[in-house]
Image (cartoon, rainbow, N blue to C red; front, side, top):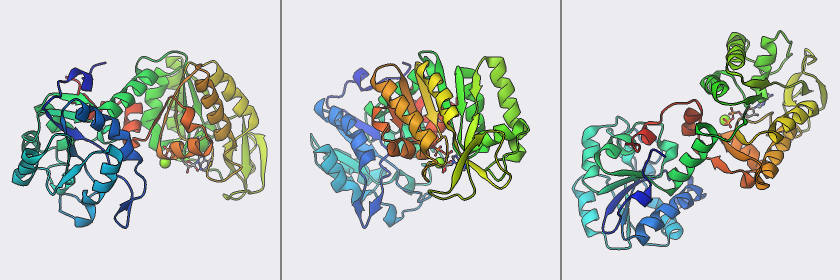
Length: 396
Ligand code: ADP
Ligand code: MG
């Protein structure tokens, strides 16, 4: 791998500037979901166990370069102490004399939490001066914030250039999983791409057809591909202005030797609501007054064959309107099959995307996937084949 990890670093007696993403939901001053905090706990524990001092850098909300008291990180302190099992000291700035004094006063075994990096306008501008001030607070830079790595900000990019830099345990796990799925994957590789719109996933589709062996297209975006073949999709969600683009993607796939699987049968309804009266029809037989809300059983069976013959799966976007049963059927079936294949050691499965993670959880499948990325925008940009500044800065 082209990046250092904590294993490559001498940590004893070192101040480690640890960039984390702890943008957790807070209700009335109390953290209501500490998932993101728990995910960085192994890195914090590792640094402490090896005699280093973790100094946490993080953003919180979008204060846009102003001090916004409601977006202070200080209410997170108790939740951090609970998750890390160690004392957390809070400092009301992430730079300057106050931060320097807090670092100097830090005792062995303590963790320092610095205030929201976005209280300074230099953060989102990747400002060199702000990065230099933060660099003075540490000896080593460690990033565990893959989900913020698609943004070149002072605490994710410029700062990484100024100190010996490495990936934390969470970042390391995320990079290894993603590298295993698209970098040097076991073939055949299948990508499942669904969700609402082609327009939001254009670059992603364009990159994937060059890298994967099979591309399964589902969800609302499949309607656009069907329409591109001259099929009438009735009242379905469909971007008619994107049909030319859909044909270009199909042509690109053909050149690259990527096989595209589109729905051959679909579940249609006249209302977008749970339990709506529905029927299964051939993909080219959607009634004019109905809309396609899920893939049908024949499509699910064809998809099952593709998955069974694959070694690696990368998934973004549900196969149908999974929020309203029974239009979650195709998504659930594929998710459960992928989970079972992964559990039996026959598939490496990586998935990401806000609705995708929700859909896989709903199907009870997420826990058996090889890796579920919660990184959102960073995951998508990585799937698009882009270099993420916060990752590139670690690979020196
Ligand atoms: P993610 O957040 O995982 O990237 P998207 O936001 O692209 O996924 O897509 C998820 C949305 O797509 C869901 O709200 C789902 O209801 C919608 N969707 C999927 N299939 C259809 C369909 N056939 N018609 C309308 N909406 C659909
Ligand atoms: Mg979404």
